[in-house]
Length: 215
Image 1 (cartoon, rainbow, N blue to C red):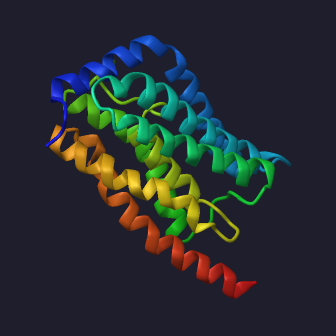
Image 2: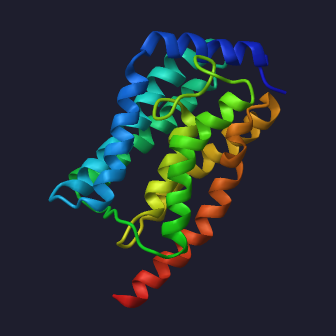
């Protein structure tokens, strides 16, 4: 049993989207930039992608969870801490220490990652509109938890070096928390989130083992 109604949940998105506009557009620009940098490998492309992902997690943790969602669910403060932790670790590992190398490879992980990225950026809002969750009621890309998590799964699958499995811990937890709530709240575009973690983990483990064997 959730401590809020579907109407209260939707009202939070309306208030949040209206308050932060036009940050949603900036999030799309950053997301597109991250995708471009997968193929346009500049010297700092990996750091830039990790920084974009980190910014999305920290923003969502503080602005969405702690400022808006906490008004109807006090557990949001815990969720905020999780999101800020994930964002900070992405910056620490990927930006400061350059331990994450991104790039597309034509293998199961690469194609699954491309699918998740496409879903988060294109299909997610489309499904929302078709099922009656148009703006400003919809969870927006890059600034709300579920599309940020799906996008992150996709981008972390699109890596070329040894993957740090700890990067997946918090996204996996949120896929279970947010995905379960989405079913209860009838948010169809979030249903993929529930399965995304369980699909991603075995694929990334297999890729990590294959990469290690080649080194």
